[in-house]
Amino acid sequence: MQGLMQDWPLLVSTVIDHARVNHPEREVVTRTCEGPIHRCTYADLHGRAKRCAKALRRLGVREGDVVATLAWNTHRHMEIWYGIMGLGAVCHTLNPRLFLEQLSYIANHAEDKCLFLDLTFVKLAEAMQAHCPTIKGYVIMTDRAHMPETTLANAICYEELLSAEDESFDWVVVDERSAAGLCYTSGTTGNPKGVVYSHRSNVLHALAVNTADMLGLRSVDSVMPIVPMFHANAWATVFSAPMVGAKLVMPGAKLDGASVHELLEAEAVTCTAAVPTVWLGLLQFLESDKTKRLDTLERVVVGGAACPRVVMEKFEDNYGVLVMHGWGMTEMSPMGTASRLKHGMDKLPREQQLGWKLKQGRAPYTVEMKITDDAGKELPRDGKTFGHLLVRGAAIAKGYYKGEGGHGPDATILDENGFFDTGDVATLDAEGFMQITDRAKDVIKSGGEWISSIEIENIAVGHPSVAEAAVIGLPHPKWDERPLLIVVKKKGVEVSKDELLAYLTGKIAKWWMPDDVVFVQEIPHTATGKIQKRDLREQFVAYAWPAA
Ligand code: AMP
Figure 1 (tube, protein in one colour):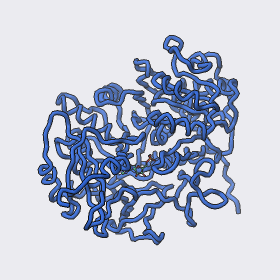
Figure 2: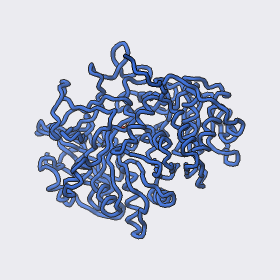
Figure 3: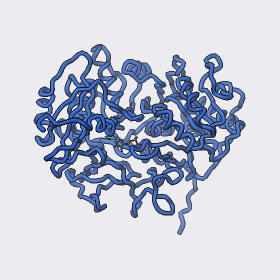
Figure 4: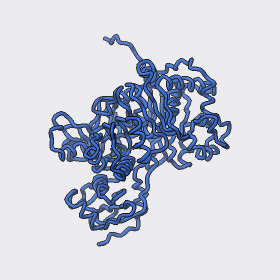
């Protein structure tokens, strides 16, 4: 027997329609690239998204065409997303932190038809232009007064484009499984691969992110996504906030501690999300001026890289802000877990609670996880055994754009049970908490056992003189590999190898203790802000252990 319920299509346009009807006056506040703070409402944004869709159609964009953006988190970027997706076209977010060659490769691979860009990225787009023949038009996301001199062919002023249209546009009703978004993941081997989100996966993922043990946004929230829209959908906030009528605060291009703090306070932000480096910046800023407080902030989501203990402790103990550790990846839309305490855990001593909270967390409904050995055999959920982390769910990629990296006739990237190998190594426990040990390629194999580089790094950054720390495994004559701790010192402070090793003593197993510590000016990062371990291993290829 078939159910007799409506087939209400899970389209992204329904999200902004919902916000317009139910939360028309709720604000979207932006620190613009031009400088001033801009305020609009969901009703305004809805209207402008319709104008944008209408303008795109006039420019010749059709259902299924790929339209790229090179932009910060702003109201304009958001309305362009809804405009593109509402037209049935595919919104391709380009990551401006990538090198020119990678960006051009990606734009060509995706066959981008036109590009919307912020003022910040005019020079970058000009450099791309000669290499990207599929891009026929450039829209600069500003008003006439701020239009720059540019060599971009037929550059259009965004505000002029919009003002030439009205709001009478019917969203295109596509199949909910059709593509809505495209985001390339910078694989460490081979070329970047395109993850193609559908309307359905975006909506289901945003619903999952809005469950109470995840971000759990509500209409009373004011949410600031610092995590960029150009990398993994700003962790769904651009969908999950309008879905519930939460106020959105868009930080634009200024992500330093002072600018972030100013917006958090001025816009009464209750929930915010970013990678650990942003939070280290904010905490340093707060510590430099003890009069500064976090008056409205209730919860901070930390993900993209492991949350250092010091970040969690400082937010929670010094400022009374709850920290949620989250994990995910581009292929997962991106959120896969969040570390909220379960029933009864709130009664545990603080140290034990921290033990749970510092894990990457539990999966929401729509995400399944398991760990396996090299042969694919499932491993026990005992919180100790680690293995390859595999995932399956409603908003997880099954293949990459144009079949890259896949196998078989349908170029799948899944195993025979429909699971995707995340490339992470992790433990799972009986409570459902997952803890990342490492990326599979970064785990340090010493004497037949594995050492987690992440865990050592996170303890090391807790030392007051350490700005950043990375741990890599280097070949060792006796143990196969041993850990090397690489440290960037905070400005104006001194710390020695012995002091750092003493600091680690008692916090990690003896045999995890790095065999040496080296100090560097800078640690290399990927375009998505992660430590570039491959480059570090190359940098230290000729390194010799002190005792060897
Ligand atoms: P990306 O697809 O670029 O967002 O990168 C995803 C990868 O980032 C994951 O597979 C993890 O290796 C890493 N990652 C994300 N969140 C965390 C976290 N909370 N702790 C440790 N690693 C993380």
